Amino acid sequence: MSALLLDGERVAARVRAEVAGRVAALRARGVSVGLGTVLVGDDPASARYVAMKHEDCAEAGISSVHEHLPASATQADVEAAVSRLNADARVDAYLVQLPLPAGLDEERVLCAVDPAKDVDGLHPMNLGRLVMGRPGPLPCTPAGIVELLAAYDVAVEGRHVVVIGRGLTIGRPLALLLALKRRGCNAAVTVVHTGVDDLGELVRQGDIVVAAAGRAGLVTPDMVKPGAAVVSAGTSWEGRRLVPDVEESVAEVAAWITPRLGGVGPMTRAMLLRNTVLAAERGALGAASGAGSS
Ligand code: GUN
View 1 (cartoon, rainbow, N blue to C red):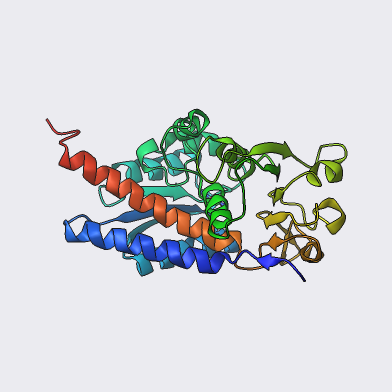
View 2: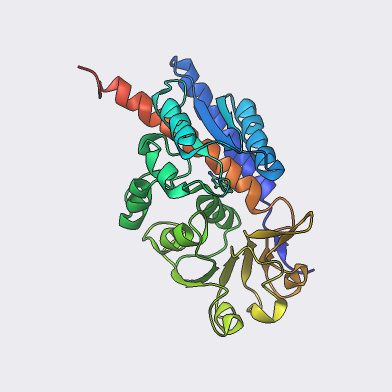
């Protein structure tokens, strides 16, 4: 093991403290901050993730509202929960935990979320803002990865980042974000996936590699340029074991690497809190300027 660990717990603690300060500043002005969550079904991992988000909120002084629907919930039931949260003045931002049970249309649900309350940054309007380089909520895992690399002074600007995976929550928005002309980004970005020929050859060209394919042990040491930074953002279940996309032995080749636990996960949760307080700050600003009043 020679790589330096990209300690997401440590950086996330700093972000959580920053968020708690901003929440306290809003409270001093009489503004409370609230996050909503919608969980459909009883998948234990999803339930655990949602519970952790509520614990994080409590620690940061953010109140939280939860809607738990049974696995038998219909599309109309889920969209009704979304409408309630859209209308709930206690909720500045919220998310519908993904994946939804089979048979439910995730895209329709995401489109029904009020873009101003979209803590995930996954509403088409917010994804469009990202494409255009306009301000808006950034998807939490991509934003967390950029923050983590910056915290360790890993050079991103002008470097070649290979993103493995093209999913909606990580790969696709991360590639857009990293290519933006802004501090900590401004990179040459290649998006690859498990359907690409000569995957190893392409990944080996990356100064930074982000694995978000959800394929256990996909990235092996021979695929990594010596001295690269390697971020493992994807996981998949092997029985009851959650296995990362990056093999542990990659640490022998890389200069920086995320730890098996405490890498990207805590950063995603911290960025969710930051997006929540940002939504509350925008709401408070709108209220102060009279926006929406007659
Ligand atoms: N499930 C796994 N990751 C995410 C995420 O970032 N947002 C939502 N809503 N669900 C998820």
